[in-house]
Image (cartoon, rainbow, N blue to C red; front, side):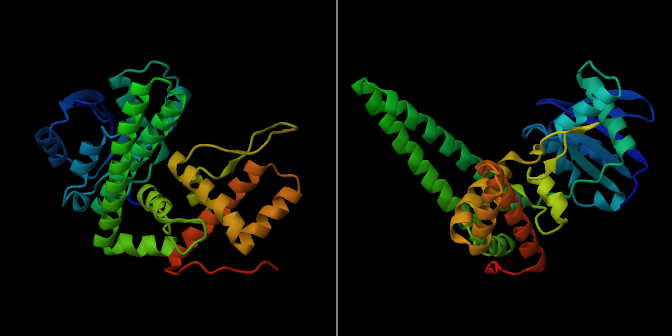
Length: 317
């Protein structure tokens, strides 16, 4: 891992960013306009920039830091989970929350924890993530309008909802076609998509979610990928007390997708079907059993992408 001489903490807002340089102790503010961001990154060298994932507002900064030539000058960034940053702030006694305080906390976090740089996002995968997110929005709106339609009693309201549903379903079909076309046009995405869909329970939609939201698949070990997918059980022990393990954190979209895939796979794949039967026979609740299968499935998918091989069903012993 490359150690950076300088660490900058950056708090990202919609219209500006606050930059903390621990060496000088100063915090300065610049606009998020492309020209201003280019000037900012142009003056960097041997620097790690630490900022939070902020629902898309951080994207212009990340794209500026991925400009050609910056890697050769030792410039990288670490995009951290906001919850993790807030926990670090509390651990260091920072209870107040302002833009300047957040920038200082992120700078201290980068120096104290020796954060790993975030790999640059492939543009094709970034577009896939946008398309998948849009599809999820449309599915959510269709679900909400369908529920409203079931409750509607007025004729005009029913007709209006029916018209909205017609438009939303057309947009969802158009988005599905665009996602399929985008994957076909990129050889890497097409190969990953085809390989994922050989696994039980993984169809076109779920394969798109996994490819979009989990670019680390096949690049890290099974424990790390389970943690990223929100499927790693965490202990809750204290003294003589042994609490129930539970899965939390990670990427919620991946956890939802793999839960659905594991449920389907547990009815079709002999190995996973047998595993579900063993877990439930041992008294595990239904959801606990499916989460365990989802973790197993994610481990299998990780190995498939790593080893460049399709799914190989196995008959349980």
